[in-house]
Image: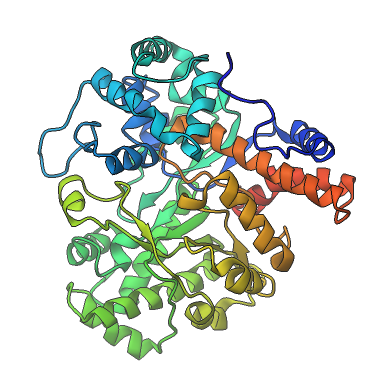
Length: 468
C-alpha cells in the first residue's frame, strides 16, 4: 500500500484539480536548483557511504528532533553530538527505534510528507513507520546504503539536482569544495559566504575570530578599513570556489548608514568583544549595509534571514551548540529597518537582495510592497516554520497581489537533511501548481500563462536570481 496519495496537495474540486495535475505533470521532472542550504560539502568530496539510516535521516534533521524533544525525548537519546563531551547514543538502531516509536507525532506536519516521500520514492518502503516496523525499515534502508548508487554523488544525480549551494563560515578554508572541484566530478556544488562569525559581536569567540580573519586574509583587522578589506578578500576567495551569494542570519533586519568616522569608532568599541548591547546591534546593522555595498561591487547576491531568536535554550546551547531546533521566530520590522540600506543601494539594478522572514504578518504589509517597488529586492520563499504546504500557499496569496510572481525567487530547501531535498521541492511544486490552477479557474490567469509560470517558479527564477 502506497504511503503517498498521488494527488496530495491538489485542490479537491475536480476542474481545478485537473488543471493543477496537468501543470504539475509539465514540471515535475525539471532539474532541482537548490540555491541555499546546509548539506555538507564533505559528503560530495569524499563520496563515502552514509553510516546508517539514523545518522542519515534523524541525527542531522532538526525538524525531526525538535518535535521529539517537545515530547520528552532527549537530544542525547537521538544521537545528536554534544559539544561539551557528554555522552550521547551512538547505536544507530537504538536511535532509529526511538524515532520510529514516536513517528505518529509527525501526523499532519510537512516533516511527515517529506519523510514518507523519502521512504517510498528513495528506499521503496510502503509500510508506515512505527515501533512494529522499525527494524524492517532500518534493515531495508541500511542494505541500500551499502550500495554504490546510494552514495552522495549518485543520490545527487538521482535527485536530478542541477546545482546545490552549501553555506560556510567566512573562516572556512573551503578544502572540501576544492576537493570536489579537483575530483573531476561534474556535479555543481558551490559555497555561500556566511560572515556571521566575524560581523556579529555576540557570536562566540568574536574577538579571536577577527584575529583569525586578519591572519587568513593578510589584512589589518585592527582598523575598520582593513576589516572591510578582509571581507573583500574573503568574498573573492569564496567566488573562486563557486560562490554566487552571501547569507546573513541576523536577529533583526536593522540596517545603518554611518559615516566612515562613525563606523570606525563603532568598530573600535566592539572589536574586542566589548561595547554596549546597542553598539553591538548597531554594528550588525552597519555591516548589512557594508555587505550590500560589497555586493554592488562584486556582484554577489545577498540574502538576509532575519527574525530568529537563535539558541533560545541556554542549556541546550551549552551542551549541544548551535542550530539544534531552538531558534524561535520573533516580530520583525522591515520598512524602517531596511531604509538606510535601501537609501544606499535600493535602486541599484545590478544588486539583488533576497529577504526571508519568520514573521508572516509582514508579507502583505511590508515585504511585498517593498519588493514591489525597489528593483534590488526579491522575496525568498517561506522559511523554516512556514516551509509547509499551508505556509507556501499563504505566501503566494499575500505576496502575489502586490509583488507579483517575478519579484520572488522560486524555492530553496534550506536543509541539512539531504534525502529530504527532492521531497521539499515536490511539495513546493505541487502547491504552486495548485495556486496557479485556482487562478485559472477563477478567471485571473490564462492557462498558457499558468504553464509558463509553473516552469518559472520551479526552475528559472531560482537559477537566474542566484546566478547559477
